[in-house]
Image 1: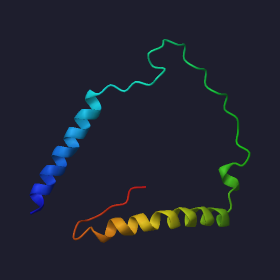
Image 2: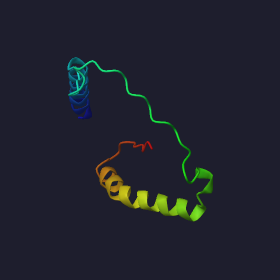
Image 3: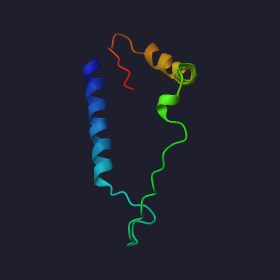
Image 4: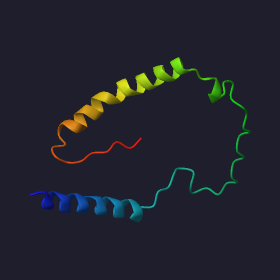
Length: 88
């Protein structure tokens, strides 16, 4: 039952990968020969990461989790017996 779906997914993935590799990607400025731009100088940030307090970290994490939770729940509803992994 799942073998047919797996074959179709594999074929679709292979086709998409080959299409991406076969089609050259060019930007509007890629045809012009220009000197490489100099990188911007690196300046230290105003607030180093060590100065972030726990409350600010918790607020940031809560905001990201609140945004991601509906998507994760929608994806896990239709999983059936498949094992799932969330890669961060």
